[in-house]
Length: 176
Image (tube, rainbow, N blue to C red; front, side):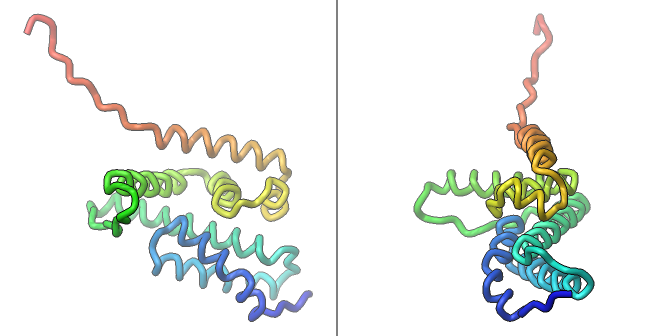
């Protein structure tokens, strides 16, 4: 079993793990929880088995924990009609653009939470962590081809989930 210098690992990878969790959650407290859980789980795993790539493991764990948190939020929001999640608006782009971007980001997070776990992980590792197909395949112990298939499926489902909601036209019956 290999011995890791966790102080050095934390210093090297803390920023990437934090960014991974925060990009998905957009909430400091939730991101901090995911951050801590990822490091703790990586440490515990390293005590039981050899870890080939600590950075990839940490990013994988942070992504998984963040997606789990998003799913909990989705379940909670279904039970609570709570719309008080307002973020500060930047002065640079117009307020309408900022609001649209915030709404789109929230819709993306909600859509990712609806994906099957493996598709969500592959999507997040690829687009939020900029890992290559080969790196993702190595971390998830699947083939690069499977990464491509999962990514294709995830993008298709996200495209469908993020399609603009068509307003139903109310048509008057003929003759009125």
